[in-house]
Every structure is written in C-alpha cells, then in structure tokens.
Image (cartoon, rainbow, N blue to C red; front, side, top):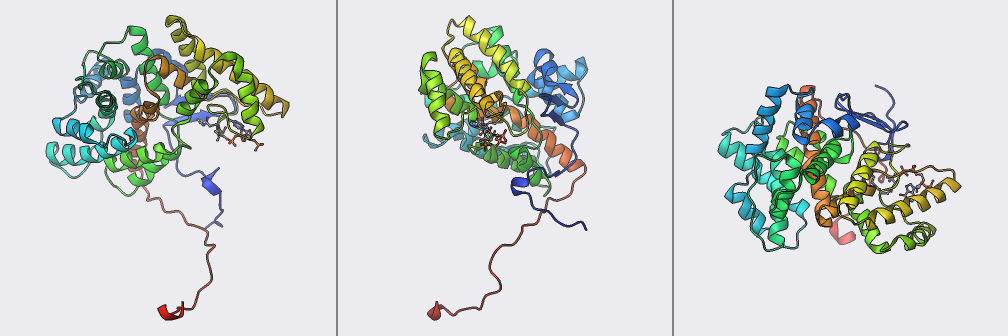
Amino acid sequence: MAEATYAKGLEGVVAAESEICRIDGEQGKLFYLGYSIEDLARFSDFEETTYLLLYGRLPNKEEKERFSKRMRVSRDLAPEILEMVRNFPKDAHPMELLQSVISYLSGYIQHKIQHSATCNCRDTLHQVVQLASVVTAWQRFQEDKEYVPPRRDLSHGANFLYMMRGEEPDEFEGRVMDTCLVLHAEHGFNASTFTARVVASTMSTCYSSISAAIGSLYGSLHGGANEKAMAMVEAIGSKDKAAEWVNNALDSKQKIMGMGHRVYKAKDPRSIIMEEFLVQLSKRKNNTLSYDILKEVEKTFRERMEEKGKPIYPNVDFFSGAVYDLLGIPKILFTPIFAVSRVAGWLAHILEQRRDNRLYRPKSLYVGSEAREWLPLEKR
Ligand SMILES: CC(C)(COP(=O)(O)OP(=O)(O)OC[C@H]1O[C@@H](n2cnc3c(N)ncnc32)[C@H](O)[C@@H]1OP(=O)(O)O)[C@@H](O)C(=O)NCCC(=O)NCCS
C-alpha cells in the first residue's frame, strides 16, 4: 500500500470518482453532467435539473412532464409534519427544523407509506420537494400567518414564493427564484455533499444522508455567506460609505463576505448570472440601493487585492443575498433555501455512491501520548 499522506481538511485529496459535476476553477466554468451552468440557467428549470442530476441525462418531453408531476404531488405537507413545524421551538433555526423533518419523513414515508425499511430514493421525492414547503410554512408561522397549500401549476421556485407570500409571484420573479435553485443545486465535493456520501457509504437511508448533509450545511463556513453579505450591505447603508467600510474591514483583517473562492480563481460563473438578476430586479423594483453598494464594495475590494497581486472575484453569494432580499425573503431563510436546492445534488451523489460503494474509512495521524501507566483513583 502507498505511503499515507496527510492533508489538513483533505485539501487536494481525491476522495472518489464522480460523473456529476465538473468545475474548472481557472476558467470559471461549471457543468452538471456536462451541461454548462449558463445553459441550465437559461433553458432548464429546477425540476428538469433535478431529473438530470438523479438520472444522469435530460428527460424527453413525456419523462419531464411525468417527473414534474411526481414532484408537484409531493409538495403538500402531511398534517403531522405541519404540526411539527408549528410546534417546533420558536427560537430554533429553520435548519434544525429541516434536519428534524427529514428524519421524521424517513419514519413517515418509508415505514408508513412504502412499508419498507429499504430506501428507494427515486420513488418518493418528498425528501427533495418538501424542504421548500417546510421552509415557507415555518416562515408563515413565525409571522402568525396560516399555511398556504402548494399549487401544482407553478414551478418549484414560483411555488416557493407563492407558499411564502400567499400570493402568486409574477412570471419574472418566479423564474428568478427557480433559476436560483438551479444555480445552487450542485457543486461537487463540498463539505455537505461529502457528508451525504460518507453516510450513504454505510448503506444508511437517503434520509439519514440528507439530514447529516443539512447539519453540515448549517455551519457558518459552508452555508451562510450570502446572509452575511446582505448583513454587510445593511451595515454599510449607502454607496458613499462603502469604500471606507471595506478599507476599514480589510485593515482590521476581516474577510469580505461573498468574495473569493477555494476553487474558482476566475469569476464564479454563477455570480455573473446572479448579478444580471440583481440588475433586472433592482430596475423593476426601482430600488438599486443594494446593487450600488455591492458594486462599490467589489470595486474597492478588487483594487485593494490587486495592489497585493491577488485578483479575487465575487462568488455566488455576493449578489444572491440581495436578490433574495428584493424577492422579499428574510435573511434567516437564505441558508435553508440553499438546502432546498442542494438536496437535489446530495441525492445525486448518494445514488452515485451506492452504485459503486466502498465504505469511507480514512485514517488519522496519531499525535497523542505514548503508552501511559494506569494510576489508581487515589493516586491521581
Ligand atoms: C472562500 C475563501 C474561504 C477562500 O479562501 P482561500 O482559499 O484562502 O482563498 P485564496 O487562497 O484565494 O486567498 C488568497 C488571499 O486572499 C485573501 N482573501 C480571500 N478572500 C478574501 C475575502 N473575502 N476577504 C478578504 N481577504 C480575502 C486570503 O485571506 C488570502 O490572504 P493571504 O494570502 O494574506 O493569507 C475566502 O475567499 C473567504 O473567506 N471568502 C469569504 C467567505 C465567502 O464568501 N464564502 C463563500 C464561498 S462560496
């Protein structure tokens, strides 16, 4: 066996072969199953992208209709789950709720509806679809409003806005929301996807894998940068204060949220699409405040980085928070929305892991003490 090497955080370690996602960090390119993110954003929708991720190819017309229908009939929450959402501690984070609901769904769907302990992940799509319904129901209960049952004639993104607002969004906003879900659906071997695959490698159910992945995404180093980017916009307040704010932050060694990426050394292609959405939404809503601030932040940040010879660009989170904000989505839902979308990618990786499974079992480098003499209690 080859000499074991140690890489903190597994940086640079190849942990598996995968056909799902290709990221070209140098050129700023992203592909799901060979399809560019630009084409997916322009021509596809979240349901079709989910099909692509789960089946490895685009559906034909009939398959697409059948699959969309299957996703749409799974949207409504069972009374038991609705009660769980209603009774969840008010101060808990919706990511904690999502984790709990997925575990509940496992018991509810697999044992009550499927009557089976084995998990056939592509049969029921509740674990993918219902995260959106749970997030919107949670938000409405927070506002002391009633649950809005889903509509089957709307896309996944438009239905999300409908269930959150209680009013149908216009076509453009529905399309923006749905495309945001497409943009976040998959991104290779990030921490939450790796978590999902590790759990899948034990041959546990997809529900256990997804619940673990949600826990992984909850951490501030993974999900959450767009929430912080939006908080930054609010803290800055106006375009003329942005340059000073960024300079002060960099002088005190703070990170500017939404800037830079471990993999992309060029512009994150998703940020280009997000920026276009932000420009269009700002115009339609006659409110360019966030966009103006963000552009000033970007300009100052990039000037400072270029002085140091470090070209660093916006990532997807830089503009997405402001997009969600203009869609009327509160900041606390930004990370849960990430889960609503990424669950499609997690499931694709769980299925791929199962196809050629080998239990993940890396080693650690022992740096503890040498063998020690046992001391009886009275001598310690
Ligand atoms: C994502 C991130 C962790 C990648 O970090 P990384 O792999 O160290 O990035 P790089 O190697 O390109 O960084 C090079 C230098 O630029 C700095 N840098 C990178 N992103 C920065 C940012 N957003 N703000 C300030 N400085 C930054 C790094 O600290 C490093 O400085 P150093 O050479 O003096 O140590 C980092 O860019 C970051 O924290 N960004 C903000 C959080 C964020 O938006 N996360 C969402 C990612 S999708």
